[in-house]
Length: 584
Image (cartoon, rainbow, N blue to C red; front, side, top):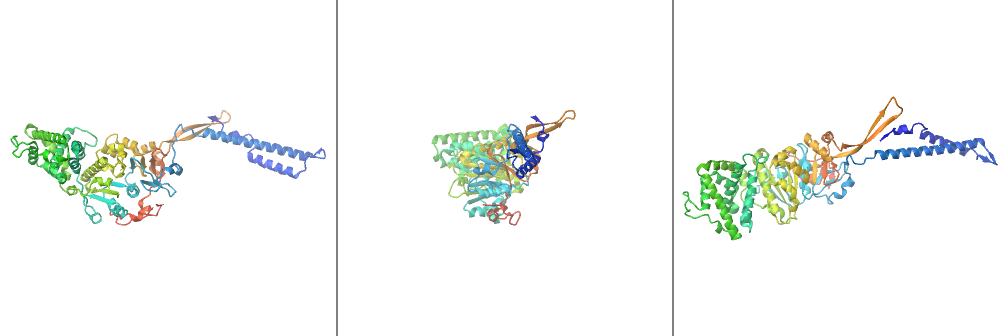
């Protein structure tokens, strides 16, 4: 659009204020003079003043209409169409009907310059992207544990969450379970609970029909115990697969004999003792060291107590399959193939070593509770999985294994309607087999997953290529805390925000021609560019198809009554209190 500027279009005539003053003066003058026509004769002065007043009023009205027309024309030509972008920040009116009614459920912060807490529920999964130092613990993790009234699973990497929230959750009627394998803060947390991951396999053997699931469950557990490299399948996959088969057979041996008393420590010791493992294989197959029939016969799989819970045909097939694997392993252990067996055994021993002896082994003995408790009972149950941050190479495997067992049990539980929330803080510090797949269908099992992490690259290294894209596409709520620094993250956030439409104005002047020119063009501009995102102290929230929401992070220390309910963080040693910003 090329036109002279508006001020230039208004030039060439008397300004509207002058016209108004002149018109008012002349109208006042007509009030001071007699009528122009008196006794059939015209009064010259009065007639002239009345005529001028009429002309002035008509001129003023005409000028006013001209200005109004120019303003309307300007507005019409500068109104954006949205072709270059339609992004914009959400207002309270935009989000009001989407907030939970009773201020419970996931808490995300507060609208700036208001007392409106942002409580948005989600039906599948959410994510929090929070770089180091952004305060995700006080702004997101603690507040969500407090605001969500359903059962919860909470990885706790330093033990501080359990110390701060145990009494609070118990006081409001929840059951609190704490897996504290590292024995941290026992003066506050007491003795650790125990969970034996082999309960998954034992359940299969003891529950009717479960024997059909033993093979697949063993495969899943062994892939959790010995995962592929973070970048995916690699050149040593043959030896890793062999080691997994070795672990699976050792687990079957221990569980068939000891059921719920079997544990990973016993499995590790069995693999470490080659002679004992070979003797066990021979007993299951039913041959002695000279490959003759074993004097005591084969291990009576078909006559065990747990075998009575299953169809005889299923038990027979399970026995044949187990004995075939044991026979193949015996062949591998002898002759020219023994070196291959040694490689399998070494990988298996390395995978199980953290659970064989030390702090983890006692915490994985016979279980003091069942993971299914999260879906059962009248009270909500919160499970804290405490790690020792000074020994993360060991405890990341423990945390991943516990979460794998937990999510596996929850997926199979018959009560699909009862909700359980996984508040997965520091997700890149452990690997949970099937977590990315869980994001796509967790809602069907009543599981709600909240992924909390610091770096995009770290997440993709841990969970594989394409995992970030899956995370972004499946999460209903995306919370971006301030203090973002990574160029990659800033670029992603800018792209997620989209472009807002603006009108660009260009003026030109040519000395060789009369007048000026201007050009108005609709263009797109990022709703917030990378530099603005980097410098902001506010967070950004994406909720389903709503416009992005600017929010103020609010810590539990600024919320009444949570600030008085949360216990002391053992790493700080004193209560955390700040000026109240939000009252619930």
